Amino acid sequence: MAETTDLLNAAPPRPPLPFDVAGKVALVTGGARGIGYATARRFLEAGAAVAVNDVDAAALDVAVAELRTVGPPVLALPADVGDLTQHRPMIDRTVAGLGHLDVLVNNAGTFQPTPLDALDPALVDQLFTVNVKGLLFLSAAAVEVMSPGSSIVNVSSLGGVRPPFGGLAAYHATKGAVDSLTRDMAITWGPRGIRVNGAGPGGILTEGRGQVTEHPLFPPEMMTEIMRRAMDRPLGRMGYADDLAMVIVFLATPAAGFITGQHLLVDGGYYYA
Image 1 (cartoon, rainbow, N blue to C red):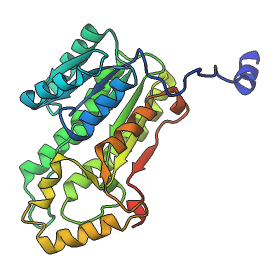
Image 2: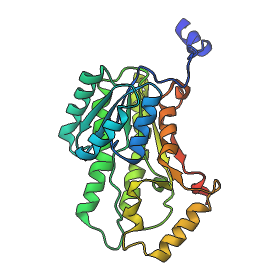
Image 3: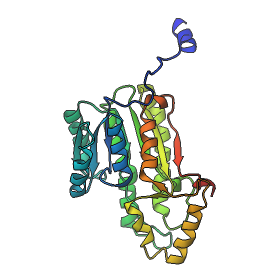
Image 4: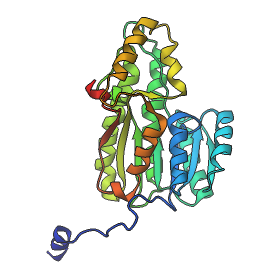
């Protein structure tokens, strides 16, 4: 009875620095460019050590060289998240090189047009292998070495809850799956003191935007309409990688210590446009 009373009446310790991640170790997948790179940099600037993963080893080398100028330790992890055999070595190298693992940011993913009337089975398989299976199995491997107080942030998409335009059916489906996994992970791993949340970008400008803007599925007149709607969102501008990076870091801080199983849209109100 005393334990129940304590749980009902006693407040948890008050974090002295609620937005601090100093001393933590974060693993960011897909970190050579765009959202992943911006996220790795923000974690470093906030005092965390960072293991940066990417499938493009050459781009990763360039990114890590830049990130090492920030200050805290940076570890390069060239690997394909879609290859399940590479997950355990990634986790082991992170722990061996940086001491422990407190935050996993599942950012790596592939983004390809998949019109419903011209589906490529191999491409659909690739999307689900990287975006869903890679995230799922890497998270399961990470949790095995994480301590209470750790967290996972899954980078999802506005398209998983409200596709802003057609032509990305399988990609949007993978992000809907990620949102569902986020909720299940939060329920399953919450009792172990591990929080799991999602951050969903919508209309974020990154180096990968050419996969849509330069694709024959999206002719100039369609892109004009897509951009009109994107700029008609309440905040009236496109998003940038750093807009999402700051939210991801927040979700890993003590300030978000009572948030789990949530999907936070970072879209400037695009959902309502």
